[in-house]
Length: 254
Image 1 (cartoon, helix red, strand yellow):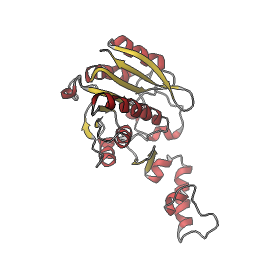
Image 2 (cartoon, rainbow, N blue to C red):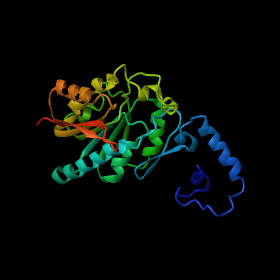
Image 3 (cartoon, one colour):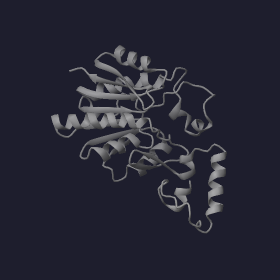
Image 4 (spheres, rainbow, N blue to C red):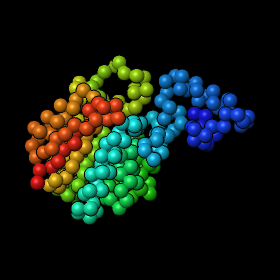
C-alpha cells in the first residue's frame, strides 16, 4: 500500500526519507480498509497476474497467483502448436477480469484469442483490461450450445478458471468479496464444469488441448467428467505452486 501511494515498487520504498505530504493520512485510510478484510486488490484497484496489472474491484473475480500455472501451461502448449500449425486459436471460457486471455495474448503474440464472460460487471472490467490486446471479447453463457459456434472444431486450446468452490460459509472473508457466482458452483463445486464440458468438446479441433482449474478437492471429479464425456485422452492432473492438484489438462481425440 505504501508503494502504491508513492508510485514505486514494493522493494524500492525509500525507508530513510521523509514521507511525502499527506502520506500518513492516505496510508492510514488504506490500512483501515484492509483491517476490515477488504481484499488488498480492491483497496488498490489492481491485481497483478504475471507481468500484467489488471483493473479489479467489486463485481469481478480477483485473479489468484495459482492460476499463473495454468497460464504458463497454456503458453508452453501454444508455442509448440504454433510451430506445428501456424497461428493457433485460443478460447478462454469464464474469463472474468480477462487475466488468462490477456496473459496468453501478451506472451504469445499473433495468437487469435477469444474470451467469454457472462456477468455484466465482470465483462466491463474485461473490456478495459483487454483493450488493445487483440483479444476478441464475447459476452455470453459458456453453457449455451451456440456460444462461439462459428469456431466449432477449430480451436487449438481452451483454458478456463470457472466458478468451482463447493458451497460453504467457512472461508476467509476476502473470498466472499468476489461475486458469489464467480466462486461457488453447487454442493460439490462441479456444476458449471460439468455443464461446460460439451462446449469444450465441440470447440476443440482434433488434438486440441484443454486446461481446467478446479477446487483442491475435485481433481478426480474433473477427470471423470472429461472421461465420461468421451473424446478425450491424456487426461492429466496438474499441480499448483504448492504441489496441490489444481488443474486438469486433456487432449481431444484425433
